[in-house]
Every structure is written in C-alpha cells, then in structure tokens.
Length: 50
Image (tube, rainbow, N blue to C red; front, top):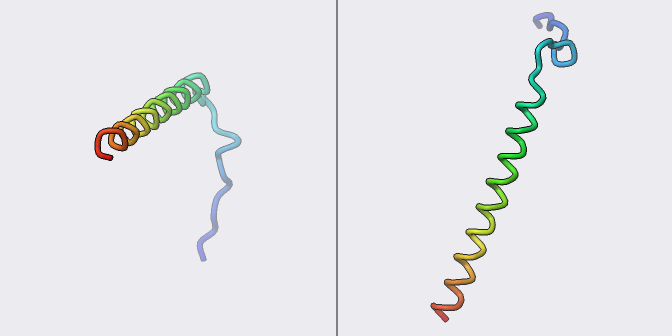
C-alpha cells in the first residue's frame, strides 16, 4: 500500500472562518424558509383538497 502523508486539516493556513460561518448561517436560513414553505403547501393542500 502507498504511504499516506500527514493530514493537513489541522495545520492548514488561511482558513476563512467568518466566510464559513456566514455560509452556514445562510444554509440554515434557506433550510428554515424551505421547510416553512413545504409545511404551508401541505397545510393548504389539506384544507382545499379535503
């Protein structure tokens, strides 16, 4: 087997943590809004189709 090098995740330089956190916040916001839209559509379908 080939010799694997050392992992560089913990020693990586120049990580842009504020950008990562902003992306995570945007992802969570999009997921929350998407879930709310889906729930609204399901409730409206239940109201108008039953």
